Length: 154
Image (cartoon, rainbow, N blue to C red; front, top):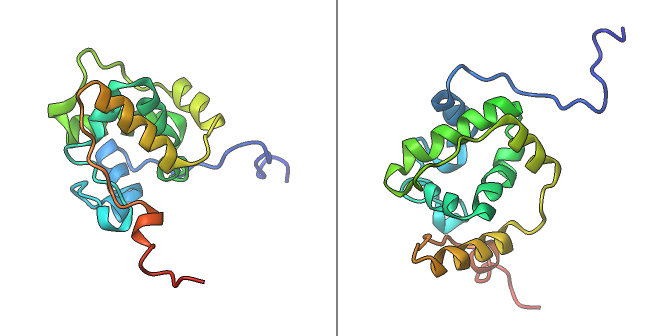
């Protein structure tokens, strides 16, 4: 029985469907859409024309690995690295930083192990760092703003 039961410390992984594009369609397009346009008004960021901008600062690179959707996709570290290499080249080639290093399984493993807290606060900080470099990252409706009209006042 021990041979068929995975250790509780092992991470279960979804099988890759063979290519980063297909992995994107299976694991990411449910929220971000098949073409990466997202649903900004509902807090789902646009990837098309935007995602490579995050790679201009180290915090943005870590952010891509640590956002909940990537962390919860269940892909192996290797397959996640392949997906993250494909994503900006496919959906935002015009904003790629020069000499962009490939994501590695070790990098993905390291950042997954040190997930950060408030995703929106981290994104806001990254937006500020990018703006200081003259790079404008389109914002999207944050949950607190998007819901502010839907929650009655006490």
